[in-house]
Length: 91
Image (cartoon, rainbow, N blue to C red; front, side):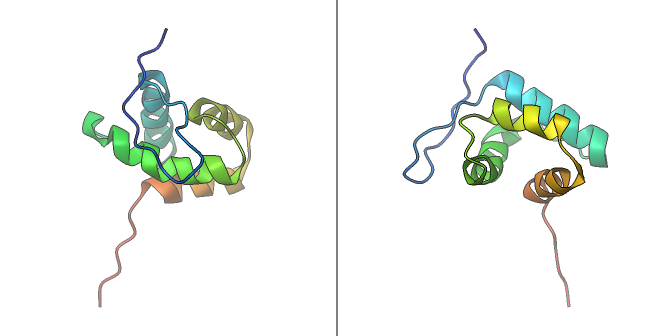
């Protein structure tokens, strides 16, 4: 059985399933898509950012989301990339 990562409870929907395997998939996908290398200590950040999208789509786990993402089109990849990147604006 995959190791379950510590994921904070967000909102009233309860916890989403999130494993070390899911995190490794996220790391592989974001690196392959835009060249970002996520450090292992970013596990909770990944959960908190992707959980919003997973819930908005009515899915019960990050695994389900990643499966959908790998089958999906450009629109969902934009959500995924935007969720995991920080856009800075300077004046």
